[in-house]
Image (cartoon, rainbow, N blue to C red; front, side, top):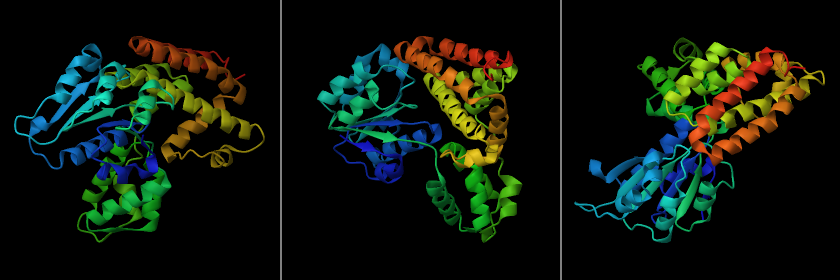
Length: 345
């Protein structure tokens, strides 16, 4: 049994135990999930150059034909050496394919499962956490403690230092997604190449305020009853392979945050003071959208919508094929109710 917390995951993936044959990499930071799956694959393959040593499956293929996964896991490499299988879960039920492998783990093959947010106790996560040959690796957005060292490490790798105020500005702007964070840092390092130190003006010149992902844009549009933006954001999110359960989970997180903010605001605190009481770290751009949402919602209206969203999340888990339709219905219900003026009362 191995439960790898977000704080220890970066170190763990670089020296994952050889006896661990199965890894579930999951969480709300999609970029970080992908980064850690790649790192685990590199650790398992130990620099193996054969392109056939890494096999990719999507969740649909595994769910349709569980035997195909076993055939690949137990196959013997033509040229010898380690092998790895990377599965994108896509909210599919993978346990029928994985359970027989847990009972008889492959000797020279590691199985990596890339997943979105999974609540503790869900079947897939519980199976990995209870198995002696598996590990569950958490991936959640960077906070200040993890983001500041990451920024400094990227600057050192580029042969530069970074001014404290420039680092602090980046901490406020980045962190929601590890992939987006690395992309912004790469642009900054390229822009500042040739300098010995990155200054605040370099950050202001080149780093965007990490324009929200299609997921964040969809959530913002829903909470502000912007029907056109909701539709376009949701279409882009699902076209990019977004998970319906993850979307509903993010909606629930936003409603929970708004509920807590409004409780503080209804006790007399201004928005900024209310936000300071919350553990969530919000970028300047996201703060603007959140402030508008806090003006339109009340604590009571947010609380009333939570049970319905929880019910939708349960239906999506039971019937993933209807996930997109169920999630879209939830989005429209939230946005339409607010537009009609009912939730804010």
